[in-house]
Amino acid sequence: MPQPDKVVRLSLNSKGMPVPDQDPVYVKKNEQKVKWCASFPFTIEIEGHKELKYGPGDGDGAHNCKTGYFDQERKHKYSITANGNTNDPDVEIVP
Image 1 (cartoon, rainbow, N blue to C red):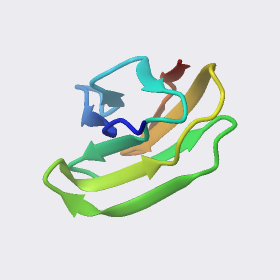
Image 2: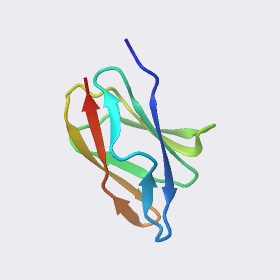
Image 3: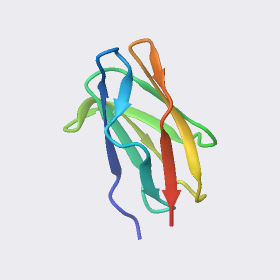
C-alpha cells in the first residue's frame, strides 16, 4: 500500500553546502517516493536511480525534486548540488 511521500527539506550551511534535514533518508521499498524541497535551486543525482522529476514550488519550498518508487532494498548514495557545492548523503531503502 503506498505511503505518503518522504519530504526532505534542504538548507545551506554556513559554508554554502546544501544539507538535508535527514541523513540517511529512510524510504519504504515500492511504497514511498522522496520529495526534496528548498528555497533555492538545486539538482539531485541518485546512484542507480534515474526517475527524477523537478517541479514548481509548493508549500514545502520554492523548488522541489521528486523520485519514483525504489524497488531494491539497499543504500543509495545521492548528490545534492546547489550554490556551486555538492553534498553526498544517503537514501536507504527499507522493507
